Image 1: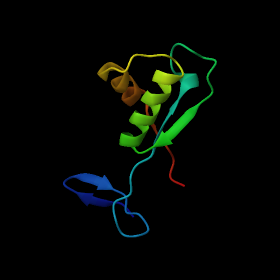
Image 2: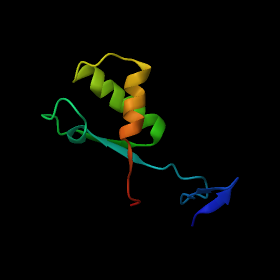
Image 3: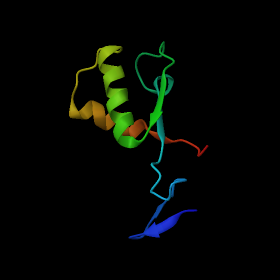
Image 4: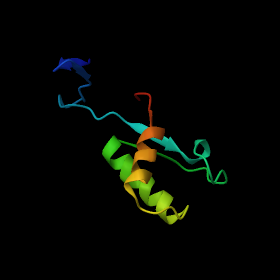
Length: 81
């Protein structure tokens, strides 16, 4: 059940703590290399890092703040399991 704290809704996990919202990034939906079918999901912090590492190593992007901002812009919320 969501709780309101400071005007924002937060989900509560099964242990009574705040649940992290999961997001995803799908390479098929990004401009550029459409041959990649990788989809990564996780909390915002983990997803930005994992997607940036993937884009740097697989797609040969430079590791820049702009790259990480592009990842954030392309994140979509995942449905709760």
